[in-house]
Length: 305
Length: 270
Image 1 (tube, rainbow over the protein chains, first blue to last red):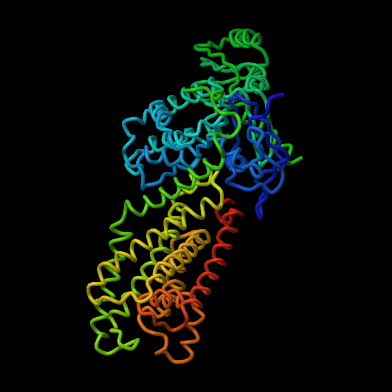
Image 2: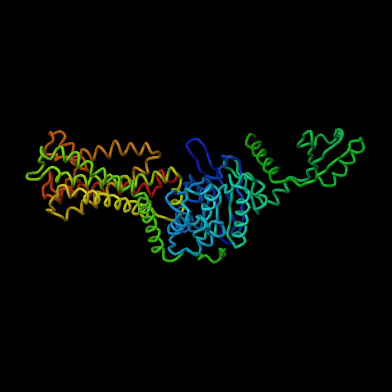
């Protein structure tokens, strides 16, 4: 078995009053595009901070590319590029100065060719000599991504990289990440945009209250919610037999969840037989948001029980 | 974009060379930081030093003769130079660190593989450099008013270096401990400022009542100023060797504390 890109074992982080992480086990294989999801306060950022060496674990251990993040911190940090969640910057320097300095911290004195390439890929080239203070939020975010890549880390961690970022940058960023992933980089991201996670991540871990409550391939997670969603615009009342299936209802549309695709025909037949006219119909599979909500509510139910 | 497979799998180059580049880069960044705002970090404190000389020198020149045959202004100049060295060394490391903490960009230093020693030396040397540049500036501008002799010149760089190192380290500790600007200001106003003013910058402690003399002798700043001044006049309140011993002990203690804090990530890594 190849060395895991990130191996988290029995990791706990306790603060005075709260347990941010509770015996988390997690392995990210090399080359994966991995999503870390969960509500605010689930422990995502704490987990990432421990992987990055910014926070010390209370117990358990983390390895990046086989290197312990405490005992072998130099090698572990060389293997890791982290894009922090906060939009931080150093107001004293230009973009190029910042990237050169960041390269130097990793022991790279002559890194301009790579810096130019990273800047070109992030559309930063014409901002190279602009002071960080003068950049827009989106541009600062790109510089953070560039800073995380200066030392060509095999593992890249992005903590909410698209929070407050415009659509264009978001798409550009994902294309770039997809390319890095194709080139062999392991990518781990946390995001609030479940659509992004569904689209990008091959595997997903869901955290709640510091525990991993789901850890599966995205495909399998989506299959957890079996059946189809049917969104209809009706002229007339919905047959009583179908009322139990409603998951969303407005004056315009009614959304039902049916166990199988073949049940759609029966539902339409039931409408027709009582004289209700189906004016519009959309059939779709469950998305990650449904799964997320279900997993989170199951986790709450379990923790109550 | 090149493939991750192109990465050297284990380490890159000799670790010692990489560590040296990391240290050099942080030193460069810390130096560039104050140099980019040198009007505020160098010119302003030089002006302050000159103002002290003009005001105190003018008022006291005819009334006070701290050492036999030494005019007050000539006595004051080394004191002001050393005070500027000390205050600016402290200001540099402490304000750089607290700014990085508050801006959040300290994370750029915490993510790379920099060791506690690399961090320590880069911050301390950059701060010493600023202190010494300001001190040299104050000297160059004030020396024309009342040139002091250079009676034992080797002591001058010794105390300038030791004193600036001590205050750079204290600044590092203050920056690590403080979470907010006002906490740092408290360090500056309630510790550094009184200690410099009560150290004999403006007077010879021989002229003080016995209690305050004893008080001054408990202040490491007194030894830095006294030893530094010895280099100019070959006269001092205590032996320069004793002063050097006290300053080196204080420096050693502070450096141990600072390095330990950095190693543990105290207030830097949660």
